[in-house]
Amino acid sequence: MDVPAKLEEDAFRAFFERHHAELARFAWMLIGDRAAAEDIASDAMLAVWRQWDQARRARSQIAYARGIVANLAKARIRAAVRERRRNTLFWQRPTDAADGPDTAAVLDVRAALDRLPLRRRACVVLRHSLELSERETAEALGVSVGTVKSQTSKGLAELRRLLGAPGDGPARTAIRNGVGP
Image (tube, rainbow, N blue to C red):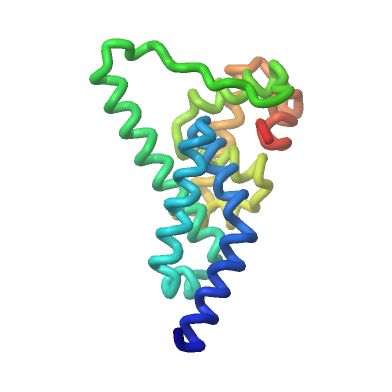
């Protein structure tokens, strides 16, 4: 292996170690299935590695990777919807086993997040759980800052409506605290 290739491999390895867990958490918050979220995060990292030259030139490598995670999650959700339409048990959804001391508020927020359209859900999760700026969220999703502001505002309003929560009540606290591990 030549030196430049080794340096690139080391740079990617460091990127992977720094960000894989965050990308898996982001994917889980978008789709609500831990195993699928791990798969998505791994697939995203593989895509980043395959496009490492392009990712290195991006303004933000993590934003580049988050965009891939969002797109993979969207594709996974669309595939699941198509499968459910073919399935006679359309309205039955398997319940996820709780791995820890999940509170009722966290479960309610998870269910409410599931009801949001993907772009709104992604904006709310990135802004309030991962605490990204509007600009970082826009970069991750490949949209304008105005779209982030609008979708976040609409998403939070919908969560408040669904949860009956005041502006900074338990629902927003649960979102900010990661709605899970």
